[in-house]
Every structure is written in structure tokens, then in C-alpha cells.
Image (cartoon, rainbow, N blue to C red; front, top):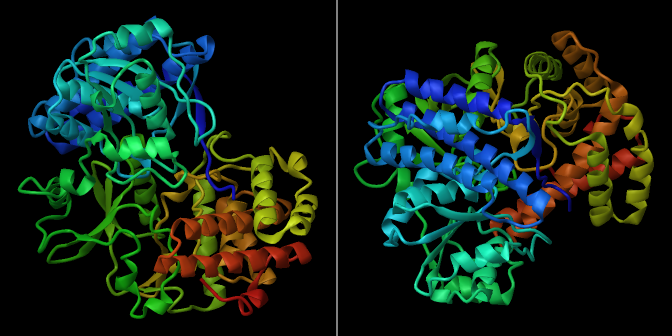
Amino acid sequence: MLVYGDVECIETVRDKQKAIEAHLARVNALPPGSERHAALVAAFIGTSELVQALIDADFQTRGFDTLSAAHVSGLECLSLLAHSIVRSWQSGFSQATPPENFEDKLLSFDSGLTIRTKQAEGYAFYALYPESYVEAAVRSGLGSQTLVIGIRSIGAGLAALVAAALGTRVALTVRPVGHPFRRKVRVDPEVTTLLTRDPAASFAVVDEGPGLSGSSFGAVADWLEAAGVSRERIHFFPSHTGPLGPQASSAHRERWDGAARFVIALDELLRDGERNHLRRWVESIVGPLEEDLQDISGGTWRTLRYRDRAQWPAANVQQERRKFLARTGEATWLVKFSGLGESGLMKQAQAERLYEAGLTSEVAGLCHGFLVERWHEHACSLDRHPIARGQLVERVGAYLGFRARHFPALPHQGASLTELRDMAVHNAEQALGEEARAALNCLLHNADILSGTENRIFTDNRMQISEWLLVDGRLIKTDALDHCLAHDLVGCQDITWDIAGAAVELGLSDQETRKLCSVVQEESARPVSVALLSYMLPCYLAFQLGAHTMAADALAGNEEEYRLRIAAKRYGALLQNYIAHPGLLGFDEEQDKVPAS
């Protein structure tokens, strides 16, 4: 199934420099504390993305990694901020001032260059905190003679933090290439000889993951061993304590299982011991808590919304954001990871605008990656308490129209119509067979004609019925910030993507869907293209079919697998129905025939 994407952003070095300078201005304007530290981390993440892009451009030109001027200069710049983060963290946030020469180093890069940057997934999606690598390095016992190797993308910045904590520098960063499950590294032979000449030197290999195969970690270790580095001298700094994924080679798995690995998990970093950083950060926003934070991650939140487990909606529990409940004497708050750096700040701004418009929950603030929003303890979700159909369409239309009017995106932020079509026909063939693939390919023949007619916005991309709550008789949207910026290929789309989602997830009839289009058009002051909606509908169904099928495969044998299979079956049946009746925009009759998720 096709579900995931690897999104690149094309921008100039000057664009990136300006964004980093803005974060530095916040650092200088804020008093000592966690908020100033968070601004410093935001500057560090932006610098990491810039340096990664510059070194990757050098790699593309040469065809291999080497200690070129761009490579060395980029790592020196990154190292300056890494040392500042180490000082800030270890001083309890009292010392967060960037070094005076950092800005000179930052501005030394050619501002006119166009670069390709990649968002660091761990910082944006998976609650990977750079400070955890600082703690892991300190506790590793490795010395200042350790040679630190970072795996790009995110590993460049993480390696700088490990090196700063160890009192050394990053020796090299590498870009593994090739098949995702069989990565290789290409390094200048002279650099290889230089780095491996000391027979007693230890190596620290730094990255997030490992994922399905761990082949990036494996590729670096293969390179070092081939150069004569003994296995016991190679130490890994991953982001979790688990084994390699199911696609790992037996040789890599054997090495990994016996290797020295250093990890500090999120709970140990932010919730352990007397420091309990996260609780203190939340209390600085909402006041004293009556009890410790309650973890409701991994689908556990459903125990609070549903009395019967049989009513639980399907959830991809492996990819849910970390989330907690915080209870004060007056209210209960949802504390959810929304992203470090620019990602979290943007979502905070969107959340505040949606709340001010009366469309979502109250926002209390952002604390170093975690957004704090009101949790409505006794509210009913729409799947347990239906409302009048006309009221539903009007309210959903008002919400989508507001997004379409106020949250514009850039043209590159999201999959093209051609990419959506390729995903849809592939998933249809995988799940429903060649006949469905051929029929869908014919239905989606007009990608070239429709391309350019989209008005890309920060879409919701999560219109499931369980995500709507009735609060004091008013319908509000939850989970409204993360999904167009998630780790998949969809991204920001035209509002018709969300209209398609509403038609599917809320069981709208053809007439109701067309009425929804009218409401969105009036609220947004922009036309809604029925032709584009007809294109988006099967793409939406095929994406959800693929996403739920892959999630079920990953959770085979788990209780959640059954719910995900039922949901995938529903999306598959609706896709077949649409292929048979492509003129209809609604699904209400079919909803009654297929088990709901």
C-alpha cells in the first residue's frame, strides 16, 4: 500500500536564515526559563535543517560524503547552538544565550543558494526531544575522544548534541542511499582512513529510529567494520529501545542485539523524578495540578469517551501523538505533543484562531512541544449522540469554510493530483484487484486538466465522526491541527479533500454533500469545484483503505487489528461503490450495509 511520503521543501538559504534569526530574537527577548529554552531549540532545529540541506547539496555534487568546506562549516555552525542547548538544559534553563559568533557563522553561507530541506519527523511527529540525546550521551560513559557520526537528515543535529555533551565534535555526517531496506553509505576513502586510523577509538553513531529495517544504522556500521573498526567499538544512539524492524537483515539484527545502545525515553526525560519537567511546564500555564499527568496515549483516551470497548473507533495506536490529561481544581486539560520548533508554534496559532471562531476547544498555551487545550470531560462524541442532519451540515460547513478562508498553504505543501491518483490506483489494485485499478485509473484520467485549479490550504485531514464533540449543545472539532502535516503523502490539499472526508466519515447523502459544498463556498468566499471533489473522493477512500490496512498489518495479533480490518473493509466497499456510481457524492445508503469502524 502507498501511504507515506518524503516531503521536501525548496527554499533559499536566506529564507532559512531569516527564520532562524526570528527564533534567536525570541531567545534574546525572553527571560530565563523553559520558554526561552524552547525558542533556542526552535533555532537549533532550523539550523539543523539548513546544515543538512547544504551538506546534502555537496553530497549530490560529489556523489559521496567528505569533509568538504561546506561540510565542516555547516557542522561548526550547528555545534555552536548545540553547546548552547547543553548549557541551557544542564543549568535548568538559566543559561540559554547563543554564542556571539553564531550569527556571523549563520550568515556566512551563500544566501542566494536554493536548497532542499526536510522536516525532521521525530521533532514534528514522534515527540523526539533533542535533550534526550544530551542525557543519553552524558550517561553513556563515553569520553571526549569518541568519534561521533551523524546520519542525515535529523542525525546531523542529534550528533551535534551528543558531541557537545561528550566534549567533542562531530567527525562526519553521512547520507545512506539505496533501497530503504538495504541502505549503503558512500564516503571519501581518504576520510575513511583518517577517521579509522586510531585502533582504540570509539565511535558513536547517531540517528532517530530504527524503523522497519534499521538499514541506515546498519549501513554506517557496515562501513566502519569494513574499514577495520571492531564491533565492540561501535556505539549506537537511537530514539527507542526496541529491536530492529521486521525488514532487517539477519546480520544487522545480530549486531544490533549485541551492540551498546544509549537511549533516554520521553517519560524518563520529562516525567521522571523530582524534576518532572512536563508537569511543571503545564502548571506554569494552567496552575497547580491535583494529581500527576494521566497518560492517555496509544488509544487509551477511548476509555474516557466510551463505556463499552465494542464501541471504540479504530486507531493507529503506533502513530498516535503522545498525550496526557492534566486536572486542576477548575478544569481538565489535554496536553498533546504538537511538535518542536516552528511546527508547534504554527499549530498553536491555528488552534487559537479556531477557538476564537468558536469551532474548537479553548487553548491555554504551548509548553516546549506540548499544546494545552481544554478537555471536555463529559462531552459526547458525534458517533454516540447524533444531531439533526441540517444542523450537522451547516456546522461542518462553517468549520471547513473557515479553514479554507484563513489557512492558506503554499503550492508545494501536499501531494499533487497525479501523486494522489498514483496512490489511489495502486492501493485499489492491492486491495480490490486489477479490475478496480483499471476502472479507477479511467475515472481519474483528468489529473492534468484539474491541476492548477486547487486552492491549497491547511486541511483538517481527520474528519472521522468520533472527532466531533457536542459541548453545551454546540458541535466542535477536535484533533484539528496535526494531520495535514503528518508523516504521510497527502499533506495540504484543496478544501474538497475535507469535504470528501466529511461525506465519507459522516455518512452524508449526495444531497447533503452538495449542500455542504454550498455552505463551504459561502463561508470561504471561494468556489468549490464539484469536478475536483469527484476526483478527491476515490483518492480519499483509497488512502484510508491503505492507511488502515497497513496499520492492521503492523498490529497483527493485537486487539486493534480487528478494528482496523473492519475499517479497511468499509473503505474498500465504499471505493467499489464509488467506482460503480461515480456521479454520486454521498454514501449514506452504503453506510448501512457495511460495518462501521
